[in-house]
Amino acid sequence: MIALIAAQKAGLLAPKNWLSNIVAGAIVGVVALPLGMAFAIASGVKPEQGIYTAIVAGIIVAICGGSRVQIAGPTGAFIVILSGITAQYGVAGLQVATMMAGVILLLMGLAKLGGVIKFIPAPVIVGFTAGIGVIIWVGQWGAFFGLPAVQGEHFHQKFWLTVQALPHLHWATTGLAALSLLVLIAAPKWRWTQKIPGPLLAMVLATGLQSQFHFAGVATIGSAFGGIPQGLPEFSLPQVSTGQLINLIGPAFTIAMLGAIESLLSAVVADGMTGTRHDSNQELVGQGLANLVTPLLGGFAATGAIARTATNIRNGGNSPLAGIVHGITLLVIILFLAPLAASIPLAALAAILFVVAWNMSEVKHFRYMLTHAPRADVAILLITFVLTVFADLVVAVNIGVILATLHFLRRMSMSVEVVTQNEQQIGVELIQQGLIQLPAGVLVYSIEGPFFFGAVENFERALAATHTDPKVLVIRLLRVPFIDITGLQVLDEAIAQLQRRGVVVLLCEANVRVLAKLERAGVMATLGATYYCADLASAIARADVLSAD
Image (cartoon, one colour):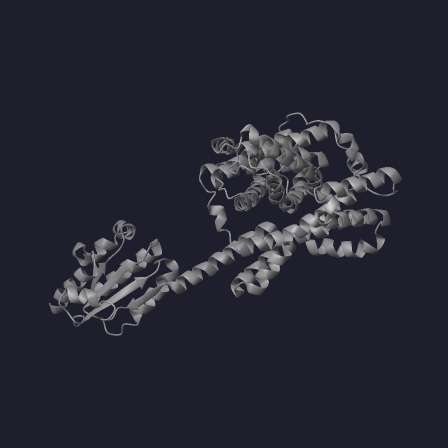
């Protein structure tokens, strides 16, 4: 109830805001109708299941999510994953995987992991969303051109078989699809249709033409699925075996991770448009509850929909009331207008998905990254994109994140320096001790940056560069914000080796957290309690005494 409570505290549920939110919710509901059916069909399930998903998930996320204006439902990003799960495990398997993903999202939200998702690098996100866009686009060629179904395990196989089938396109189907696509592209630019949702206009026009002229061979929702039943399905628990549950763990995690990324990206976009701030952990809780409940009422995986959320905001939606009205609008449509859906051509829905795929691909953003991003980021972008298209979305994201992490660690390790401090750099501390230069046989090293496993090589190289062992080695930790176990072990071993060679080691200026880790890891025991100094001036004074012995 976080979204509702936040809206109530902000005064957004007052009667003066009702009309704008009701209008926005109704508009988004109309927009969601063709999208829900198109996403459902592309995911391998019945078109009405997309509407069920938008109704149930839309209302639950509006009430329980972490954003006041989030609109949830089926999205294009899920198509590739869900269609594969449906093909392998059936609709029941898809629904069970969705429920399992709901539990994972719920646990992620309760564990306060909402902020972690934000650390997935932009090249990875842009690469896999562009890849998904390409897969959706090519995957809809059959419905757009009226081609026979093709069989192929991998994208390149399906692509080549589809290209070979293009000469056998169905002209009436292609004509309706092309007309629908033209309307989708041109409607937002025409003054008299700007306020009518493009997907609705294209779907109504194509449906009207098919109802009037009954083009032979044009596939419709009626001919392919027998139409759409009126009303919501009864509550039912999907049947699945224990073996399938184990097999569905991987797909469930994939749905959960993709849903988390998509919903939080949508919430961030909404924040930018409204000037508000969402609760990422509560958003994951809301998405988890939605995905847990929706399959029990005939739906499948849902997440925050960026385009529909933006449509909601642009039309005046500023509270969860709009999301609730969006779901009620779809419920009213399916209760009273469902029989009219039988004549909707699948070609019109394919045209809608063409536009969805184009928007998902973010061609301008993709091209900008290619031409302006650092070479390492460009490589990560292209690798993620290619793997998404030709291998697997999960593999692509995992490898993309791993490569981005390794690149980050490399850059971090390069930024860590172990430098020798000269008299000019520590002049103030020397003056405090009445000295003008360091005592003979004393060296001062400063570690500058996080002392983690990636920076260990720099430290070892700096020690090796000292050809003649000093009497006393002072190691400054002032600029070490944190240290990991590898750094602790290397430092401990280095101190022990230096001591065996007769070098006295002093540590100084560690912050409270680093000092606590030094003590807990036993480094202070190796060093000796009297060989740690709070500041450099004290360390120099101590080194002066020790070097004279």
